[in-house]
Image 1 (cartoon, one colour):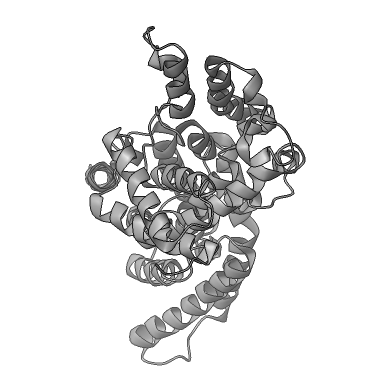
Image 2: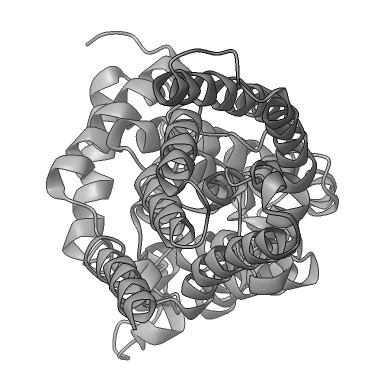
Length: 414
């Protein structure tokens, strides 16, 4: 009964923490399953080891748990899950104080280093830190317990060494396994997608070279904006690079790909032109599925125009048919609106970068006004209403975008 209630108490703390501080994760079954499976997996391995040979307990790479969680989520959650798991396992491990102290010190030290631990270079450094920390901490605990280091167990040092090796060997396969099993996206996958030689980006380069240059510029300015407000800058960069892949099919109908050709929209009615422009979102979503892009990247494709209207062709239709009421829905993106800081940043950066190309020899004042006007227009249209971004953060994004555009165009001071 005692074990049951203590375990229940620890799991209740886990659920309450996720509910109050990581509510988006709490509401996502796949992410909650990921956290619970990780806790149960390391617990099962520990139980098996203790049952057959408790002397090799420290060969288990306990720090894999916070490292794998950090690859998908934030620092606070990875540390908390590590703490919860160590508390649970301390109920069944011998020398529970020693076990808790060793694993907490090693886990916290690893988590408080570079964010991208799963990157191979950082992973080797992390494994070395784990091993050295275990050895030093174990030696000090032995000194406290025995009064000297004469009885220290070198056998335990070997276990710590092999634990570090197992951490290096199993982190990447474990992360890959959870990505495929639960359709999650880690920083490792995002870094792989940053390679412009991926099949879909090669196709974009061949079919719509102007669009490729556009998305790379958007990626640069959006990434800086994400850093300024503490958003996921890597996710923003990759989302920016892939957000316009839907332009591949009708590339010549988009202005950035119309060098040295007659604008094909001149032969179409405003409705037909708007239909082609609007379709690049749905085409992009289909291509994302075809090329197995993660859902987190597909979200940027779906949301980068929100439910805005293609105003140029909408106004043109009204001029051609002044006496007929124009149906706005025929000129409106289907959405949804951006629902995160990251998707909001890409929407803003995309609109501003595209609009800046329409200004010939822009001055600093022109670019500053452009940024202000576009963001104000998007505010009026309530494009940010579904995202947890504050006015203060939008102001920071504005300042970054103004600075980046001025640097890009090397403008004169007016």
